Amino acid sequence: MSDIGPLLKHWRNARRLSQLTLASQASVSTRHLCFLETGRARPSRAMVLRLADVLDVPLRERNTLLLSAGFSPEFQESPLAAPALSAVSNALEAILAQQEPFPALVMDRNWDIQHTNTAARRFFAYLHDNQEGTPPGPPNVLRRMFHPDGIRRHISNWNEVAEALIRRVRREAIGGVTDQHAQRILDEVLDYPGVPPSLRTLDPATPQLPIVPVRYARAGRRFDYFSTVTTLGTPQDVTLQELRIECFFPMDDQTRAQAQQLAELADETGRSPG
Image (cartoon, rainbow, N blue to C red; front, side, top):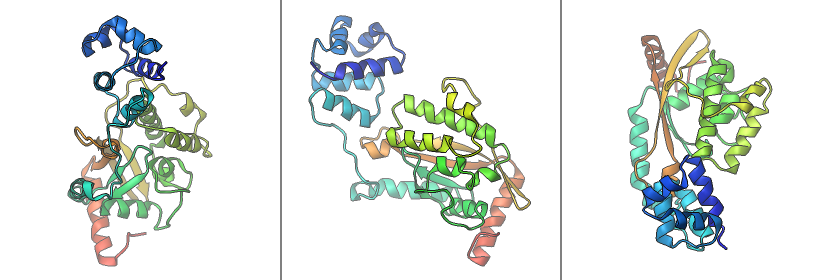
């Protein structure tokens, strides 16, 4: 008996496909697919990859499917600093630099921040009043957003932003992007003081606006941003597929001018203004 059957059924249900639809799209018989899901038949390596492709299974989980079927993994997972990924690292640096003087960052599947541009370091240091290490643990978007000593106290529409962020985390979990580590961080931040219990029961499938503004305010300055999230196209490495680039864009001329002023003051003083 193969352990891959329940996993195939999980991904088929996650993609909301019937056995008939999946079998048709993968060019296999419904009977054979049923046998694969129930463990009455074992798939070939090619069949595992074909079904995973139709189901749009992330690369990390494709490796899991292969291992469950008794095959070796297909996709490599390289450190971002590996020489083989140097071209990608250079491209990421170029994207972040192009976003100046507005913040941009690169995060992984656990919402840990891997890279930031100068504007992001400057802006978040300004929000933290140049105090380092306020939220516990490594730099993480969820911790920074939800911790009472993080940037949450400077977001005037925090409830709206927090709800949208939790829905996004849960949608990505359904899509196979997050793992147990990310889930532990999510449970941790939902236990922070002042976080509404209602955020634990949000339905990720509920439609929401495609753009949620984030309104920051500190020391008489106001910054209204919206952000876009970019992923790398057709990656063949697990690490690269799981990277997300988030770029912040000003929603008005005041924010644009304030960001430029922060940059100019930092150039003059060597640190973010207090």
